[in-house]
Image (cartoon, rainbow, N blue to C red; front, top):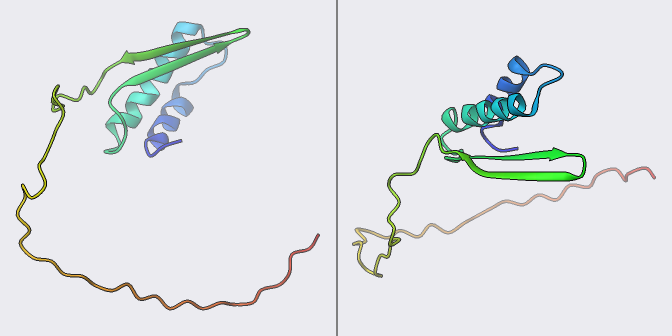
Length: 108
């Protein structure tokens, strides 16, 4: 589960009930995923749903697009090397103190 899972789980815990029909289940899943999308900066922008029933799996890709990415270029982005000026460079050597400690052996 990802970074939006807390918001999604809160939606499940507050809205789940036994005996949901397929459409009700999909609606609940969409609400949960949207809660994750809108309450977490690092969550995605679309809702994909997978309905698993006995002997069948339905993938519903891009079932909802509640937060479309409007800033994506159709041509993609290409920045030539050296296009951004480097104002200064500072290299800091990495130093770490490593302490090895003996522990107890695990029981079998």
